[in-house]
Length: 119
Image 1 (spheres, rainbow, N blue to C red):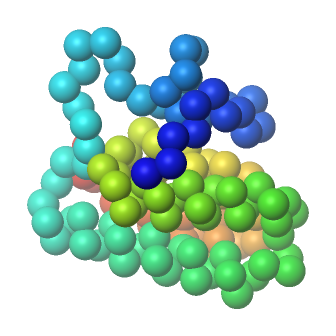
Image 2 (cartoon, rainbow, N blue to C red; image 1 turned 90 degrees about the vertical axis):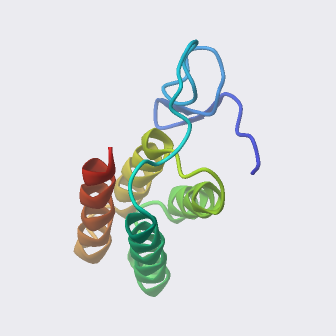
Image 3 (cartoon, rainbow, N blue to C red; image 1 turned 30 degrees about the vertical axis):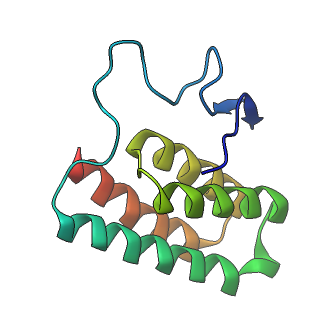
């Protein structure tokens, strides 16, 4: 996975830089998504659906560049450890970049609900 040290999108840090909202706190033992294998498969499926919705609505996005970055970060994270706090941050970034595209907001909400249930 590509490390995004100190990258700042919309006032929120992504990466493991000092002051970052995401990453591992000293002494933390949490490293990835908890939950069953079925839940993790469902998470991948929902994120794939979300990415498809983003692609279908590309021309309607408020911030296409920001959405593209969020999509890439989501893809990288789901290919790796699937850390919920990072996924939630990337979903927030994607939702903000989508503007008023309801289909993207609804798809992101499904992912958030599943992540919340897995914690």
